[in-house]
Picture 1 (cartoon, rainbow, N blue to C red):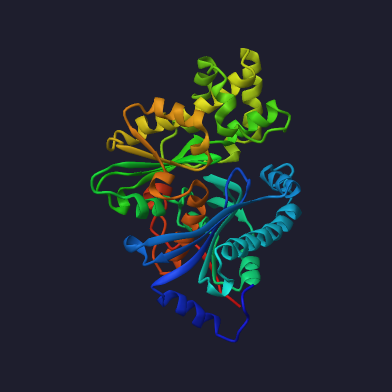
Picture 2 (tube, rainbow, N blue to C red):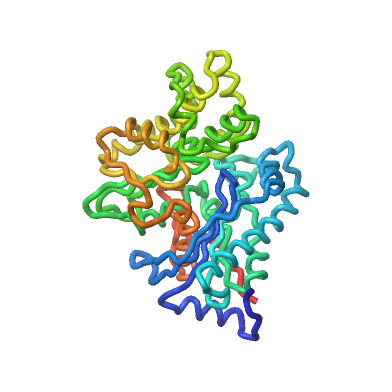
Length: 407
């Protein structure tokens, strides 16, 4: 646990700000809500001079009862305000534990950590502008109380990145575009950095791009719909299609796939973001009912929704990326990169384009998203703007992240 001394918290902040090399913990829980992904990373420099070395990483699964309660929060009819309030602090405790565990696994103590960057768990995301009594705004809500993280660890914590971008008129997502630019920019290769988590999102970095040339947006469902269908078909015995085995045994229904591709989000122009509000449980049940009427069952249904993820990604590339610049390489990350059938389908849809994974660049799949939070926190404590208005639609560049001083 973090030590308690009499050093002025502002002096601690200034000391971290002045360091050329920082040891940072990154924390993330994605739309699949499998657990807390944590990384301990050593970061030198900031901005375009950022370099990093991963010291340890791990995903700490949620206990079944807590995961069930998290999923209740996603449903407006069940996620009452008292549950949101309670789980905000419960998840704060779990995030703090993850930070301590990943640090100790690398042989360090919390006193040797300079900074924690935490994304939290998104509960609800409303990227469309809504109005009430003359007030019009977008909104987003993440839980996993960062005050608890700072208190339990004694470490300077930067968290809750999305709201500042929303306050600046953006959609608050995708927030990893800036990190993708720092890591994958190239003067000779145009890269699409494709994350396939619960939702699939892309960051497109044309060759020789400046930060203002980046295009980033959600392409549609990633693993979320596949997972929901598998859970339904197996009555909860399986949580996901491991290695894409079920999909590989099925036949894609082109009729059902064509219907899926008519989803308005897939065709919407960027900037665009989505989540369970579009592709969650209610949509999965619509798909199951439609499939039953079409006579699509079992593995064939899994194969078809898997193909939907691959084809929706390719469709967005053709419609919204290729008109800008030819895509030379796609770098795939997230849990979807471990689904062999999905990766095969994606390569078929993107025939002629090189398809790599984050592992090819020395970044383990489990580590990428928490690594992004660590880098965003490092940028925030350095005083650097870390959003990308061309990706989120924000009016200007801002410093995302709320700073909680150590005690």
